[in-house]
Amino acid sequence: MATPLWWRRVRQHFGIAAPKMRVRTHLPWWGRAALVASLLAVIGGMWWWGFDFGQIFGGFNRKEVEARLTTLESEGARLHTEAAELRARNSALESELAMTRGAREALSKQATELSGENAQLKDELAFLQKLLADSSKIAGLQIQRLALEPDGEDTWRYALLVVRGGNPKDEFVGHVAVHATLASAEGGSAPARTLVLPEDDPASASALALKFKYYQRVEGRIRVPAGHRVTAMAVRAYEAGHGSPRATRTLTLD
Image 1 (spheres, one colour):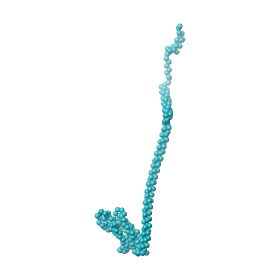
Image 2 (cartoon, helix red, strand yellow):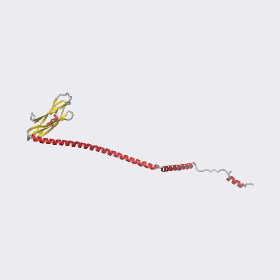
Image 3 (cartoon, helix red, strand yellow):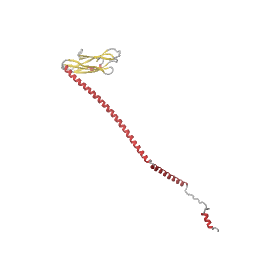
Image 4 (cartoon, rainbow, N blue to C red):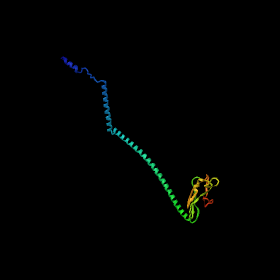
């Protein structure tokens, strides 16, 4: 039986032997590039979003860590500033403490010196009261409490008290002459000699001047040549206008 013509045409278009169909896009190249870029951006965003959520689900939150790190940096800066302030305050307190200690030591030393001086003044007051009571019975000039001791290198300090007995009506005016016997220091070969004040030391004349009614303290220093020491001292009190001494006292050192 012959196949109709219309059926053969239908089979040619829709059957197995039908020609292949091609689908071609009409997008330009820049459109395709934009599409690819959008696709890559979507993929990257999904990856980043998945990375963040993966960190969160895994127990690591990057944003929280960054916020914590920022907080710790701020806290560290604050603590550093506080430490600098505390160091400055500590230095100021140490300086103040050093000044306070120095002032306390100075006051303690001064108090000790004043206490010693007060005790010495009390002893001298008692001595002078007794001395005046005894000297009132004996008229005339006396030299009391003659003392001599080393005072540094090549320097000796002397002190004496000149007292008038009886009931004097006027002031005594005169001066004191000091005769110091010098000998060679231990192990030295310097010759012995005598030092006379104020002749050998005119600067000591003012300290040796006498002008008093009842008593006067005389103190001074003797500068001896190098290699010498004082072995004895004689003190003479002269009244103005008289060539002979009114009182004499000697002291010999061991």
